[in-house]
Image 1 (tube, rainbow, N blue to C red):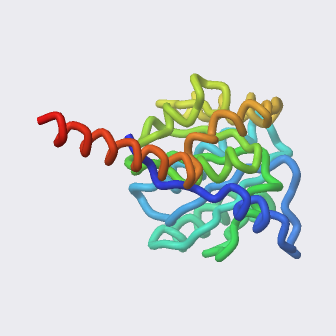
Image 2 (image 1 turned 180 degrees about the vertical axis):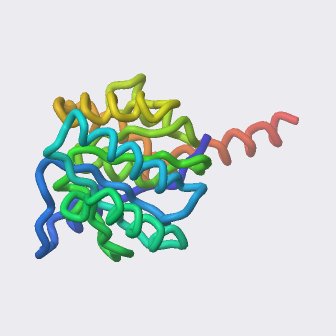
Length: 200
């Protein structure tokens, strides 16, 4: 498998840009379109349940979409306006991602998630449904937790927010996703094909 390559230096550099709004320390990020297939309504419900065991938590929705109004109305119904933050589309989400503890995805379907790679680049673990690439990026559970139910998501978020990840291990693990590593794989693949033609 050859993935899209990532420029980790650029991600880290952008994460150091100024972001003037407050991002609470005990917090979660959800990045992506606010829509049904991305599971953003489910993410809000998981967060509501998380507050029962972790009342200091906050959640930041980064993105916009057709569920935005519904999610905001539900937030008001639950009386969670001081805990649930809608940031809309962010050209540079990295300063926000850098400050939260965990990235959450309750998506129903996903390609290989760039958001997970970006989170890992900034030393953040993730909690996710079993969608494209999540299992592999979890590093056998070291860097991410794959969940099936809302209850599992709540428990995983609480655990991840209490713990920390080994950033040196993450750096070594995601090295395979750099642009250079992917270009090397492409060149090796082309070279193999060329050699096979010559042999035949």
